[in-house]
Length: 622
Image (cartoon, rainbow, N blue to C red):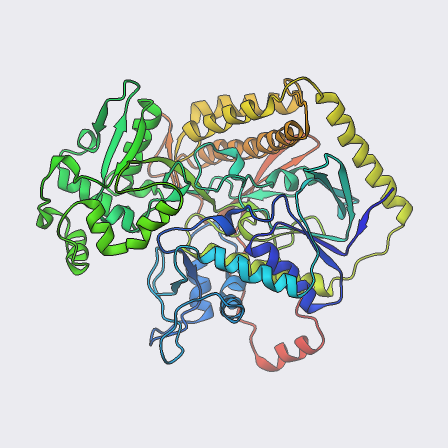
């Protein structure tokens, strides 16, 4: 049989995937390639916010910062492994300067200092930004570097199986989305850089075309961890974009529309004081992620009001920037909270309508939507409470290797974040994690194995997938509709609001679907086959997430950040297990969950002479 032979296959063309491949190529002479479902898709290239943040060590001003302080802050988020936190802190400057040298326009002052600002969960003004499209710029400069390094990129290939033998990576099987044929890659290492499991939710901020492939790792036998921990927040439905920052701070109207087309300015139904409501709307600007601690007497009441209108009342919800809220001709700004009033006063925005305030405070925010076909000056913007980022993911060690030798994960698909994290730290984690994986791969010694054995393994894999395709061959494509149904169930019952009773029912259903898969699935063409693979990945990943949610609640009986649980058994004073990490594994077609203590922050071992000796002897990796 024909196959492509590489030492390492990187799956994904986002910022983490490109960086992993480039760093391997720069560090050693091993041959590496990139496989991607769609080179121009993905979250890194197609998402942002009003000011997309990159989090790194303080590199300007007189703030006393250090690697250890940054590691402490990452670690203190809860359910975080200390060695991952230390690596992300230690490599943040190197990764940031690499991006600067490649051309990402991070701002600096006339002395060369990269100044910063405070983001959420950040005590040291470590945040910086290249504007609304920071991650897009990162992806583009890393892509250009990959081209200069002549790295081969195989586009339009959907990875459908990581070939594992004797608990180590042997290759990857892919489906060519254009021809419908399968391609086999022989390799010693796979770096998954496929982003978060966006495909399990219907309401998401993830761009169209990004579904993730966490099921690939699960099926291969790798553990997922912290899968209960997500970021949810308000976003526009089309285009998918966070309505954070200035979009909230200018105080738009919140309007729901029922099945008869009747508009309801609904926040007055949830707040007795309209100025308290507006103050919380303002806070949603930089308290964008839903937070269960702010769900009773804080800004996340706004999220819950939107959720209630959408899910409980089955209405569509919109932001209206054309008129002031609550029929006010003029807002009495001094009735707002001090924080909101002072901010708007300092911004010279105590006047006019929301769109006029937005023009004054952040005109590019209007142009951003206009470039995507939405004119905020003339129409309302549909929104929903949506999933935006998975803080959990594939379990990795301090070299971003999973418990399967040769299988690595970097970027959002790697589960190195915990309960909370500083805003923008995900961009740093993707760069640091992909660099760590590259450093390990560059010195990793792989066993030679018989070519005949590989061909046997590859042919067995190929045969299974061809049999699957034949089995689901039919006159119509049915997987897409089923996928929409299970995604909608997930968004309504297992996102920012988690109904334990319904989660239990959903878990039983998903397990049964997996047992009977691919019953009820037919595909008449390659698109239908791709949908079937996506449906299977979503089923597998959803089941792992639902089991994790149910298990966490049974163990802890309380909320701990990204969601509120609806259950009669909830206990507000229960232990939220911040010093523990929950893992879920799928082996022999069974799921199992276990808990372990977080790996602590490593002790200081930086005595120079010892580090120098180990470095010279190349013993710092193993």
